[in-house]
Length: 159
Image (cartoon, rainbow, N blue to C red):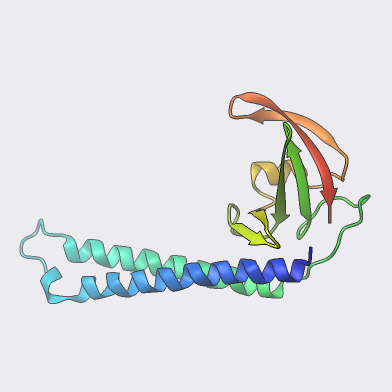
């Protein structure tokens, strides 16, 4: 799998999220500044609530822009099977017989991308799974608690 293509998919997904967020932020800003949102009493907080929402959406948009910039500048590399997992590794993991693909990224853990008809989940080194994976190699196994029960993990491949 080409990691450059995967990065483009991540950036495109973030861009889609940004477009949606910007549309919502414009609507919130319009609501906050519309004359109908003017407080009619000291208990009327519609305008204030809309302003808080618009501010939060603006911060979230900035975070997405920062992530896009980070992913555009991210140097990717291919990992040999004997190399330790690190940032930009693509890991195929078997958890109790179920296989999944994970990309170790700097931000946006939980983002799910479809690339070459395969679903890939972005995880960060700081996530619980990322902490388990960092430094391990293809072929390694371990057992850890998952949802209150023990799960068996096996790193099938690293690229």
